[in-house]
Length: 441
Image (cartoon, rainbow, N blue to C red; front, side, top):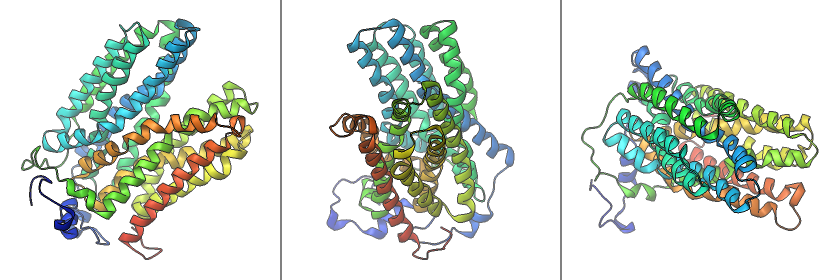
């Protein structure tokens, strides 16, 4: 097989060759994993330490992203009060960090598989700590965009993919639960770091909160990175071995489209639901509580759906999660104008949308094999980065359009349609794997 896509045209692409390239430990088109994969397990200590360390890294990276709103609110209301241009610039920082999680996915996954998961996570930890430290000395919003948004964002991109997929290779019987626990670190990190950041900002300053954050990222991230590894590092691969022919594979293209739609939809409800609730008479404090409920439900959903995938099948679990997320936006959101229905919305959306983050890499492992899971998942994320960039701006444009405004109906339909489109993509891949309705796949 050639090392690159040079000279390859659509006429010369063989679908079977592409499938063989994408799948190593799991045969594409097969309805069951090999017997060797079912029985092979690794020492408990090693497996559990990999999960725990990746859990911590996920929490550190994404917890800081989720807590940025605390610093943004303080700077907007206490430092740059009345300066609309600077306040608007601050709003780009969260988007830059969220975008970076996806944009750097493909090169990070590629480097991890060719070089080292452990070393890449350690390097990413250093970059994250450096970004926070430089941010603490930034005086203007544009400087924060560079330090907090870009430098710290690059660090997140370096650790997110490898730490979310490394545990998959260590498990066969409980792979879904392992990945679920790992990515639950995102929600737990937000629940811990956001109030910690709030306390630090109020008791010291934004600058010192960033310096302290840099310190605990450096310490905890370095320790955790030491335990990030995979069962077997393929030493035969090189930086010239990436094969672009993967995009000619229908399953690969459909899975990429699914990730794109979810990426565009996921963050918008978390951003605009508080405003929706406040405009319908719910206090800002209660709106914050409802978002906290959604975050808790997200953490529970990541573990629960991963656990369920081990029993009812990962592709089945993915289809169910996506359709319920779509229903929550299309049916529940427009009526969530009081606390009671708001809790229902927060629970359903948080649980199923959070569950997606466990199921997406598991589905990729099912469809394309475990050994190239990190680079494959990274490719999906990088292609979907434009969705991360457009999600909130498009939602805001719809909200401010004529006929919407306080009702948020256009926004809820927009997000619901994106989730439903991702559901259809998941159904296509599920059907390509098995057309039997009750097959465990």
